[in-house]
Image (cartoon, rainbow, N blue to C red):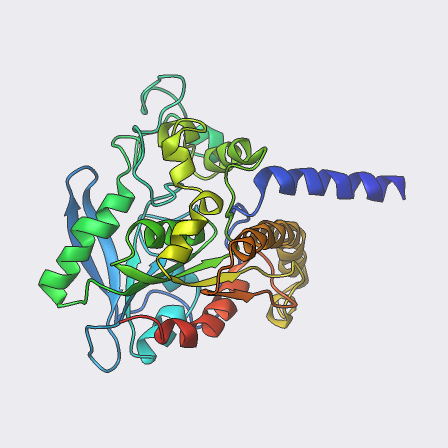
Length: 346
């Protein structure tokens, strides 16, 4: 009994430190998910970050009025969005006559405009470290957000926005944005500060109060683990730039903008499809994804209380009885969200 209690305590501490930030490795995708040949690469230059790839999937009916940005999690790769690689959500959106915009890259970026390129203790990237391994071993390697300053919010709301209009005819107003974990928080940030561009924002398993006690250090650990990034390069502690990124702080703006919000987190219990995989993989998914999603649920519930205390009437909350910190959960949540989002964009 004592050993079980200690293990539970250890798991709880690890989960508290790694919180609902998407630190669990993305779980196995459904069989239908993968690179979609119907989608295409759309390159746009950022004056700060250089050429940035976005994957585009056109609406089935050919309209250009209904547009949604699907934002990735902390382990975003430079190759393909997790939404395309690990789910069939882009195809479902396109079938519902919604144009899908999937920015590629931005690992640990929070889709924010950073204060400086990421480095540690003033040591520039490329000075040390190993090219193998992950997390802390990557801290001194060069690469996205290290050899240059991340400038994602400006890119999404300026260069990419107008390039989509000018080259594809996409409507630059009343778009939607949604994402998991890091991307969920970022979707709310984009909607809060760019209400003409985003009339809808969805957060799945997001961390929506980054100024709560312990959160900054938890995010620090998360960013080191997800590519070796330094939170201090993103925003100085507790200053205006940091507070600007906190959904708990800017909640009144979301209400004043009358942004339609979809706020969701799973229960931490497995769905049936989480159990229909080999035993070892299912056990791993449950052990890692359960505690993380339980904490995501607690974090999201706190944001719900904040919004309710402000009298918000513009939010749909989704707390399903099952759902781990896994792509299976986020895919099912997107299915639930799509009708409401469809009615509130364009």
